[in-house]
Structure formats: structure tokens, C-alpha cells
Image (cartoon, rainbow, N blue to C red; front, side, top):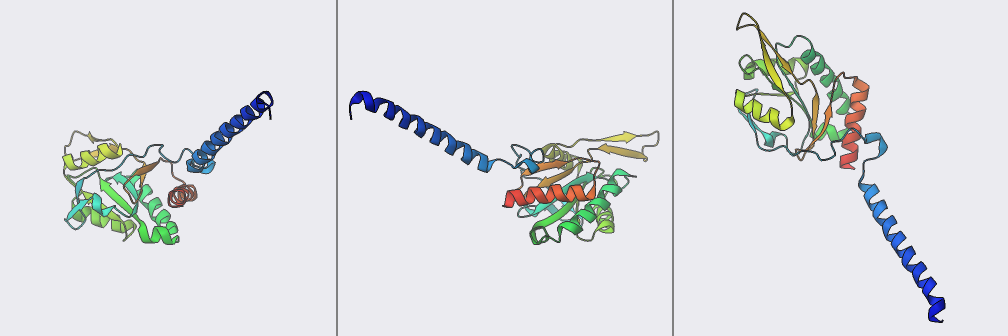
Length: 212
């Protein structure tokens, strides 16, 4: 074959090779991307939860180690909350009951309530509160600095709303539910209003995607 005739064929082969390489990159990249039914549910770069120290409902240390190896639904609230907190806790009970039908969540799933009112919410108070909604729920409290440290990591805010009587106050706080992976990655923030079936579907979709 003459060089003049071979040149176009060589160019064609090179072009095809480049296209094949580009297609391979696209397929590889696409295989790692979230499918359409999960887009918008996951944080693109999930932050990693670092060390923290609180107190559990038995008065013992509660650290990040209690979350390792577990899917955790995390909610911040306070026991004197008149509406948002009890409503969300009831919703979490129903959601957890349904998710426990999945062997994966039953073995590695948990719900954690962290108070934003440490002055009134002692370990015993938190214990009675969380167990009223579900005996399997975990609860934690701590001093102001310990709670603020965890709150900063998660990205929640809370502020005490005072009245003329210093003993009577409320707490405004972020009302979202946070989903943590067994590797302590904050992969999703689930914001109110909550609809049980939709919440279950979203959580299960995320778990299936990450574990699959």
C-alpha cells in the first residue's frame, strides 16, 4: 500500500481510537454518577463527621464511635418543643419501623435525637422523651460547647428565645433530618415538611445506591 493511500486510513484509525477512548471515559464516569431518581438527594461531596463527645441517656460518654458501622437518622430538637419536635419524632418512629423491614437497615440502622436545650434536657429527661416515641431510639445531650461543636459539623443552627421569665423560654432550631452513612459521611439533608412514604422512599433509595 502506498503512503498516499495509507495516510487517510491511518488518520481514520486514530480518530476511531480517540472516539473509543472518549466513549470509555464517558461510560466509566457515568457508571459512577447517581441515577436520575437520586439526583438532588445526595450531597455532591459529603462532609466527613469528625470526633465529638456528648453524653448518652444513661449518663455515659457518647462519641462518634456509636455511629460507626450504622446508618443514622439524626435529628436535633428539645423536649419542651410544642410542635415540630414531637411531630418529627412520631414520623421518625413510623419511618424506622418501615425501614426495619429491610434486613440491611434492621441490622445497621438507628435514630439519634440530640437535644439543643442542655439546661433542661438531662440524660434522664432525654431518655424518657425518646423512649416515649420508640424504645430503640438513641438520645444524647451535653454542655453548650459540646453541642455547638457537633452542630457546626452538621450545619445546624439553634438559638434560645427568651421571655420576661428566664425560666420560660423556647429554642428555635433547624428542623431537618440528617442521614449519616456507616462511614460517618453526611450524605443527605431531609427537610420538612415530611411525608412518610416519600421520606422512606428517599432514604431507602440513598441506602440502596450507596450500598449497591
